Length: 206
Image (cartoon, rainbow, N blue to C red; front, side, top):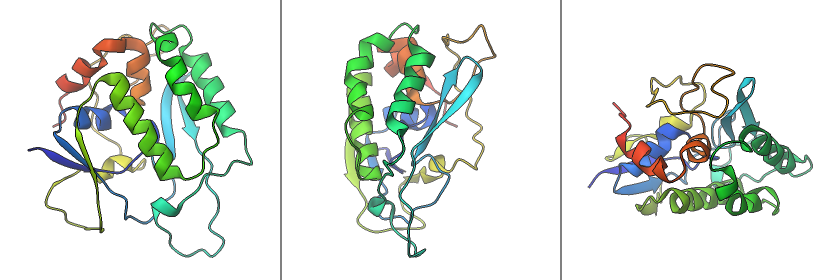
């Protein structure tokens, strides 16, 4: 059985979801310490001018002590959900499948969000449902630096430049700029729709 270890992230990258689609079991790291500037609370989409970052604001830790990711809550004093949804609508309204998935995704941008990790796990569950991924899910009960399973936790680190390019597909803004690899899996879903699962299963992950 191919088992992989991942961090829950905000609308995960194509690389991460390709790893999920090709695995038999996914173990989510839920005992880690929170780190800033990672894909735990950010994702990239394609826009008319190129890559666009969507970032969830996080409530500050007043004590400056380390805290676990599962303890981190979202800062809702900013209209981030409205901004993210408008950005997605602007970016993908003319894509082939945006309207097909729009109603399923909209609640993530209209219903109040509290805990970041819970939000990311709900997103993951829906993405698997929409894409058609069937995989066993588990969570860690302790943090291990050197786990015995395939460790893909580094995929959450936005400072690590991945070598993953992936198969090219037609992007809605392809006439405005070159192909943008490894965006949020939403980009693949909105452009390829029901064939997204096959696309993910064919990706070479090295």
